Length: 479
Ligand code: BG6
Image 1: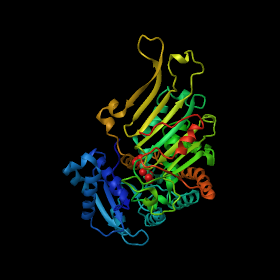
Image 2: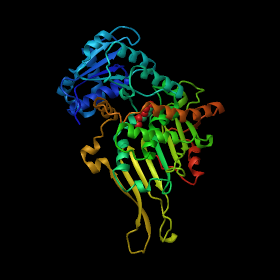
Image 3: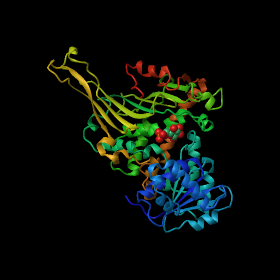
Image 4: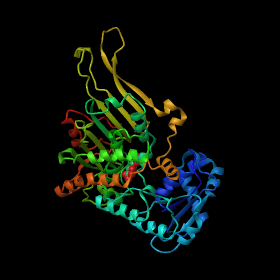
């Protein structure tokens, strides 16, 4: 879908996110013909540099992070021409007049706060009082959106002083992932699943986000966060919401977000016995968590597994098991929905092993879906049952376009320009997520719980296996 001509200001334009995701993502959209002529991208940061120096920096970022499209030198040069740069003092006066002269009121105006949350208030105040951001301007903010309910509330209140909620785009990049959006299409564009989508037919749901990377290089941020704040409060919570929510009346920002909010509010507190936290150990070629975090006493978790319940009519008896961690065996994110047994079996045990139907939605890598069904084992040996997968990978089913999964940031930035907030978190959603997360964290802090060590390259601490075994269930393999 085409977008209108825009001026996008990126605060923190020299930072890591701008260089790794935002600028290369915009370049890819440029190559896709999605950036209308006359649009401008204005980098803003504390560093003094010329527009040409900023273009050089961006050229290098594209070469490193934009994939094969970076080889198109002509396109890179043309893209760099739409870039401007202004050195800005977020807490003072420097640069703001220049910025005002660069941002045209007749274009869509968007301001991306790719800076520490401590600066959100200063930026918002200056954009507003200096008349740079009008009532139709959009501001984009990144996670972490607070580190608990109180700080998230304070951030929301600060932004609300200058901007309406309809102008605020809080990014959770998981919502920009193609496969995450696909969850809504699968659930609400098919009749097959929805009649079975409840406690009567679903035994349990597993959500796994496993990573192979450690936290080296960002240990000081991560150590104040941990897996619960870094992944569960936001990304995994969003996945859970998309699985558990009621059908919205329309695919519309507030209709979708209202339903997600109800899920978060229906989440029960998590019992201490239903949480397992872990820290990765050193392997022969990589340091352990305690070295990466540079705090030998750290009790921050690099892994968490927990069982939670959505207390409403649809889900009352279906546990949701969530796990995420660093330095695990493989990089894999998936949601597995395990159905219950048919109410009565007409087959004897000797006629093959009955296994549950499982719907697996693979979020990354090898994006696709797999539905495990029972069939008759082919052959003359009588009626023997066997489980087979109905497997679909985007790449195979949709050809090269299916394999070309648009990066989450590209999609989300274009949605900002379009003015579509469906894939962004509303302030009340973020606060509700913290309201659920806070007591869990306070609980382990009060008890002084220490995370359990786990081997790098494993599937996490042994106790996490027990979390499911004691319920007569098991985690799917991480591979
Ligand atoms: C980020 C977290 O939000 O998401 C990181 O801060 C994590 O710790 C990352 O590695 C995972 O994102 P993705 O897109 O690689 O699954």
